[in-house]
Image (tube, rainbow, N blue to C red; front, top):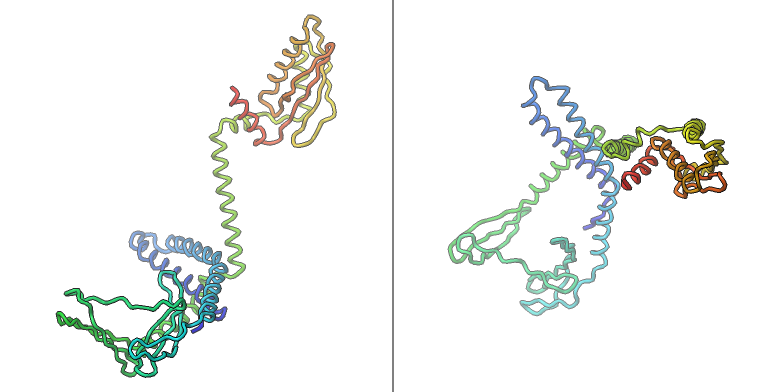
Length: 357
């Protein structure tokens, strides 16, 4: 038996599962919505159905290539395991001590433990044994009587295409007969295959996305995710004191800033405000100089008052006095101010100021 199949087999199988999932969803919606929404049945129900099936179709498309690859790799590995497994050597019949012949090998998979099972038959007494590729012998679990719990005996015969197993208990006369009709099973299997083929023919174009439709779904989901993230971030910012202050801050250009600072400084006898060449790296930093015309102010007082004026003038704007402060020499004061260009940068500034306060 070969496990690895043609590529179309896996494609059909995956699409068939998708179709059955969508039909099952349709059946559930028809059953639950038509009984509770009778006055409004029709379009509202169809919208609900379209939404759920669109999601199922899209998610199935997203996982299709990966899932089929897993199936193919699994079946290829199974074939390689069966093909490469070597049978135990010199298996002896327990009944007559004759050397047994290997008649069949197949994959034995119980609880995800895949091993290769080899069947041997004695050429003389026709007794059989089953051994795994590691040499361990297969032993079937005993079947116990449901009435008296004694071990049951089984006798199997075959009549044409029917396998008959007679199970009996020697202690309490419990008896039961189990049959496997291979011809009936074959017919039912063929019937099911025809039904599946019919579903594929009828619904594949309805419920299985094409490459273009699938990519459109992936893009729409990604866009929706980004939108949701933006909405969450926006809500988070709305509740953040730093962002609330940042939204209220005046975003000033350098020309307007000069006017505000010049007036504030001149009111306290600081004149001749001059700006130097700006530094435009991550932020905009602008050097400035100003003259103190108050002869009574000493260096410390001059620096302190100038710093306070500038900070107060900039408090609700997108500009700040830089951390190195202001230097003083013979009535000349020099420093730098920094400009912030967006809400996030301003929020960082206000966050720092709020933490300090």
